[in-house]
Image 1 (cartoon, helix red, strand yellow):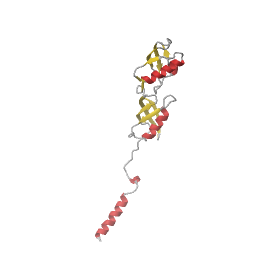
Image 2: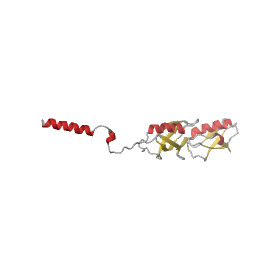
Image 3: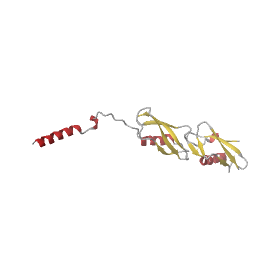
Image 4: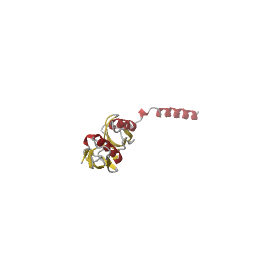
Amino acid sequence: MRALLVAALTAIGLSACGGSSSSSNTPTTSTVDDAAVESQLKQQLSTPTAQVTKVSCPSDVKATDGATFKCSVTWSNGATGKAQVTQVAPGKFTSKPVSGSVQVPGATVEKSIQADLAKQGAPNATVNCPDNIIVKVGTTVTCDVSSASGKANGQVTFTLSAEGTVDESSVQTS
C-alpha cells in the first residue's frame, strides 16, 4: 500500500513539474534567423550587373535592434567580400559592403573594360589588370591597355561600384 502511495505522489509531482516551457523562470535568448538575413542580403546587395550568388552569416548573433555583424558575400562577377549588417527591427536588416573587403578577379574587370572600350570606338583592346582588385568605392583603378587598333595604347582608369562592377561612365584611356 505504501508503494502505491509513493507511486501516486511521484506521478502527481512529476506532472506538476512538466508541461509548458513558459512556466520556466529561465530567460530565453533568441538569435537572428541567419537564413532570413542571407535571403535579405541577396536582394539588397544584388544589382543588374552583379547578382549575389552566396551569403554566409553567423548563426549565433543575438536578436536585438541595433545589433551589427558581418556576413561573407559572393557575387556573380566573381567578387567576394564582407557585408556589414545591422538589425533595424525584428526580422528587418540593412546591409552594405565593407569598403576594402570586396575583391574582384582582374580577369572579370578586364572583360568589362574591353567591352566598354569597344563601345567607345576602340575594339580589340587587350587590357591587363592585377590578378585581384580590392574594391574601394571612390578610388580609381589603373590597368594597362594595348592593341586597340592604335586607339587605346597606354593605360585605362576607372572606378568600381561597391560590388565590384566597373562604372562604365568612368572608363578613361591615357
